Image (cartoon, rainbow, N blue to C red; front, side, top):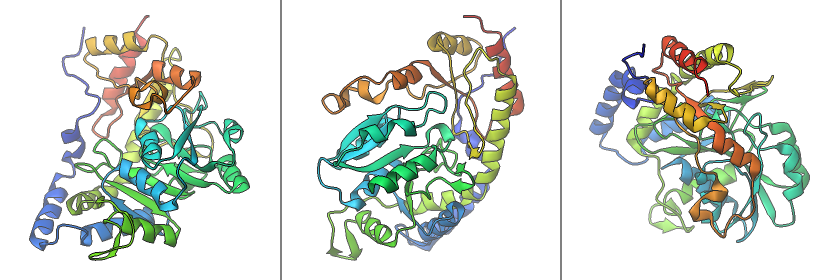
Length: 366
């Protein structure tokens, strides 16, 4: 007999409800302050996020995409320089490269971790290669040791797309601290705002100062414009909300890891489950499984009043917008995109919710 109550994939009101009282207090302080752009909330959040990530600097920007665009822009790479990027990333990562007049060079992921395969990077490096833009996908860090070694060997910059991996670690070192880190605070993220928001982390003072100008019309001093800049400032009220939520990020991560442990222990082995290797701490922004009958499985779960998501249904090389930009086939990325299914794993989900998902999935017969 079917359960009546629906298990939603995500419900942002439920997710944030526990923070509402502190959000309201923060909003009242904000509106009474009379300072609504680049004020104390932004400075406070930037300082707190730097401490959280064990980096020297954080610069708040308007979105995760802007964080990627401005990170690349700050390096001043020549037009048509090449940037290595995983073939199964979300389109935003590649859009940031193209928006800077650079060429994305796609490298296939490891089929087990879904992150870029370090063993496939070196063959794509040439004299036009300027950077490796890695993506810590679904909440798990990339294998950073060989990537850092390659970057040092060929004098390449490392840009980390940390949009899904707030607080993830690689042998106790936080993502976003290996190179320049680009974060999204889109509302569904583990550290989500109540609107669009993003940030860039760096230990490099020169890059920090460059990005501070780039986010604010290229200006370091009001009305004096030294760069071709952007209007990409972290909103003051979103920074306030993020400061509230950052205090609870470790609790959010623990909750999601506890739910993931139930999936990993109890979900049938007929599903390909995430792999978490020694030395990695996955924060499970997404709990991604794979199954050859993914679409049929998704429909079956809807019949059981369980909602899931696809991350992502179409790989970058098959997107219409990338026609003429990305050439070739990427079978590993294609396989992941064809078989991936994201299961409910929100801060508002209970252990009982997860056991119900597992029961339905273990009873599924293709």
